Length: 362
Image (cartoon, rainbow, N blue to C red; front, side):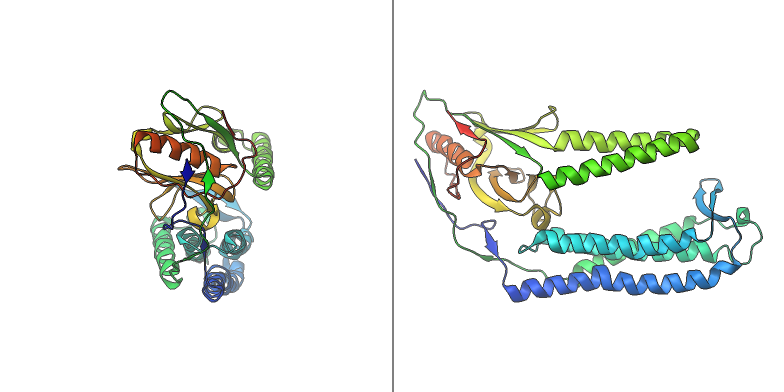
């Protein structure tokens, strides 16, 4: 069986250099330069108002009012970290991560960076402004209305950030090379297995995050025993998400495509009779899905995308297309196409002709 290559909306794509430079420049302006200017304005006002703020100042509000206190300089650090550092990090890592691909995921992250900066500005200015001139921080006004205003600014700025960025339509690049998989005859059974895993860099970053959360948990266990459930719950959620999405087992056989986490959940199965078409593509998780893991793309696709590189893309009947990044995707797509051909299905597989590192046919 000769698995053929045909042009389609999600083949390997190339963005003209001029359009890519323009998208990156606008992204850096919206996600780093604007937050820098806004953060500088907020920081100047906060520093000017701090002498009028009680010490300790109110730093946290609960349902019954002020329930947390700290030094007034806390708002200086919040203005810097949340107003500029976090948005800039999100934007710069996105610009670097998408490389030569620019899609809806990248636009959304940059919009969120701008929104976070606006949210930080409203909350920090409001928290400091309501405490100017009062003798005791317990007298500070409730911030419920201000929080709603802040989240409103967050949503509006995300939309503005999205609209101000260019909507780039990638131009089709060179077609993928065909892969040759022998036809599967009636009575013959061929199974292809492979493992999809996070890259080493991603594993290191996530491991460091877990270490930081463990450290915070230990600190709060010593200092705040009554709030111990917060870091513990965070640690459980992060650990569970890491364990369930770090590695998946991919299987192609006569029953279709199956993708299952190494711990058993989550999992997805695409029966052969639900497959409309299958092909191998190059996938950039950051650019196409806005990150790694089990993702929903803004273009309507579902992705189990753990690293940049080859992926199996399956168009499903009455469901979202499914994209799974895995080494040897060309062979996996070819095997699935062979089963479609045997069943008389009209699917077409586009492949890159690669040889799987950990996949096998037998």
